[in-house]
Amino acid sequence: MSDIARLLAHHDVDLSWQRSFYEDLHERPELSGHEHETAEKIARKLEDFDCEVTTHIGGFGIVAVFRNGEGPTALFRADFDALPITEKTGVPFASTRVRPGPDGTRTGVMHACGHDMHTTALLGTCALLDAHRDAWSGTFIALFQPAEETGEGAAAMVADGLVTRIPHPDVCLGQHIMPGRAGEVQTKVGPQFAACDSIRITIPGRSAHGSMPHNAIDPTYIAAMVIIRLQGIVGRAVDPNDFAVISVGSLHSGTTNNIIPSSAELVLNCRFYSETTKRRVYAAIRRVVEAECVASGSEEAPTFEFFGHGELVDNSPEVFATVRPVFDEVFGRESVDAQRTTVSEDFANIPKAFGVPYMYWVVGCTPQDLWDRAVAENRVKEDVPVNHMNTFLPEYEPTVSATTRAATAGVLAYLGH
Image 1 (tube, one colour):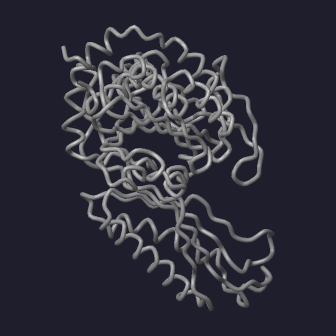
Image 2 (image 1 turned 30 degrees about the vertical axis):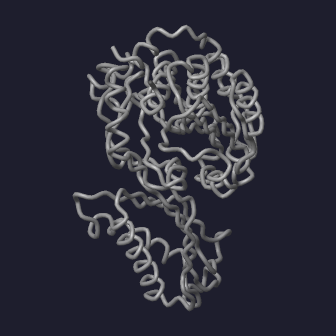
């Protein structure tokens, strides 16, 4: 057994506080950009450790720097914002909070993506590394990021001078809980989470009374034709061996029953693993929209606004080669190969800003009996709650143990003696 595996199997650090901390975060979630209570709780917990804490980086971002002599520097990131979702888990610590959502409408708020677990695990790693300084040397950076769900948090921290305000890391690490057998740690080289963008397209038309469609240029009709054609891009312009998604998230056109509106708005969400494919698809989207507008006689050109960008999470081979053998020792049969996922994350903005390699892995969080039964009966899609569902809730014990140990093992793969 390696020193890292021995430490994680036999440490004497009391981590029982993690449950109450996690349940408190879960019961009192905060939306992206409004995480002041959560940030205060994290900062207060960091006071238990010997570290230098910097708050309010890019909003509510927090960085804790643990210095322990000469050696490399490893950064581990966790996020802590929640989603505008009304919780339906039924647990005693379920969120009942209602807040104004992004559009101003009051909505339930829920940790439906697992960020409360990510934060609890990283604080557990802080406790372990602080108590066992004899096991490592160098600098450990714990970075707590707000506003991941809007794709703004990492970029905001970078824009607020992150790279000049903390020690320069040699490697960046992170993790995400996902559907899968609770406690299983899943890693891979290369693309793990897809790159994504949202695109707001405004289609110009000409308004007229509904009784006089010949006097109008109907943007709703143009939008409908565009939606049909967009799916043909993925089916006919993308190599079947590659991957692309174009989803129409919303269509807004008109406000009443008898007026053809002057414009329509489409909002798309697009995802890729390849920069080349992304460029080809975006050129095709522009071509289709512009052509449909011309075909219907639009007198103005459509406009395109890109937002909600998520970088491709593309795990570095050299980091995988360093971390995976440690995971294999620590987790044994529960260290497994990951599959790439089509969801997106803004984590990669942080190592990209520093120009360093990174690895981002997945930890299964589905109750083990539920997962095993669903797999055996081929009912995973029907029976297993996934991130962003109002019933999503990790199985606490195996998930908090695995995420805490994985974060610690990943850091010790670089800093451990």
